[in-house]
Length: 491
Length: 99
Image (cartoon, rainbow over all chains, first blue to last red):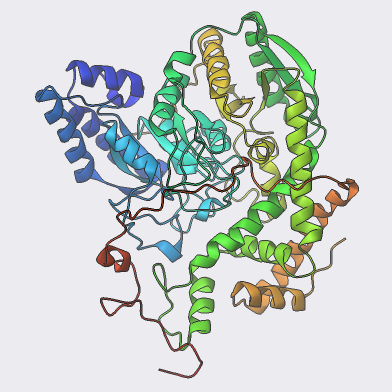
């Protein structure tokens, strides 16, 4: 039997396509066939671009035939979270309000991926406007966890995570505001990385919380993370928050091991609420790194327990401002029966936004409203400064910080939908990092007794993606942890 | 313990330009009350003299060269509009009343 390219890494696909061992079209067709076979079980995509993907792949093949340079992602088929603007297809944010939106421009990361030879398979499902931790807030449909179809894939980048684990793309892009890449990567069993705030241009990323949002890759392994980051990182004059810094070649940062590296283990992340199975796997992961020559020290991030409260003020306040643009004037849903402007705003928003988005707009509007600004928004920003100070102090004692990604593995559909606060607390280990601004990666470190994936999180200093990649790569190589492939019946 | 009344919800919904059913108002009053009660734990912390952190990356005065760059062509800018006359966005009457 010939090679199953849907199981290959992006790196292996790139090597094979560039060397002429396989045509890009053959690889893309294999992914489209895989999607056709398993998508009815996983439901990761909002849109699949069969013709467009094959045309992009043939263009790569044509360039190779002409002897032209095809870029470091030549022929690698990828999926994009549906809040990243693309001129192809629609960009819906899994919201009714943008159900028919066709972006007139490509996001910067999309331009860069295109220039590097990547092939776009389509757009991936998510919680509406990236608000959620299970993808159950999508207005289109529920994406399922490939490891157990009765469980959520995590969120908000649930489609991005599930598609990678189900081999429906070689890698995907997601976005992470409070854990929305790392949490679904942990729950769905792939590698997810949130770059430092400012590393990746947010031009063309539909804004949720502008001081926290960051685009990042979800991949099958750590080396593919380096490959994907090389493509999307770098300064962009169109995003004034994008960092005017040189970007290292991340693929050259993987080797070298962890000898001499100091790993901080924050005691606040290993208290009650952490599930026994997750604790066991994360401790085993720390042992692998110790055996590989790293030193571990206990550190303290004393304001950890306040992070969720800070986050839900800041992100909802920023969201309430960002989402005010959906007024039915220039794009998006407009209620057909509005008789005047005010009615047009109110009816369009009330019908266009789902319940969680409305809840967050309400909370954010309240926190910014006259008389409450100081008590909520300003207070939250001051505590955010304390959380950042915690990280700065901890990094005086260590190079990276290692923790679980989530307290428990994936949960069943509906398990947390009745209680918004309980859903919010699922992000307790990922949120602080967004408030601080640094990079973090989640790598699979085993499976629960029920076969559900468990994630190990490694966080770094701002702009030190290199250290977390090297630590994660060393862990991946030394641990030998390979998740059993999810069993999906071909239809 | 934060008490959010139905009247509070109606006031904030007005600011946010949302119209809510009675059932939604009551549910939101309860949920927002719970969330705000949780958030009140921030008051345990003394933040006197702490500079608020507005952004993860302090960059100020990011300016570009004052030079004309290509911008979105009109037909693309209007492509997604619910209603246009080919040159402008069209909206219902601004000052009340029917069209």
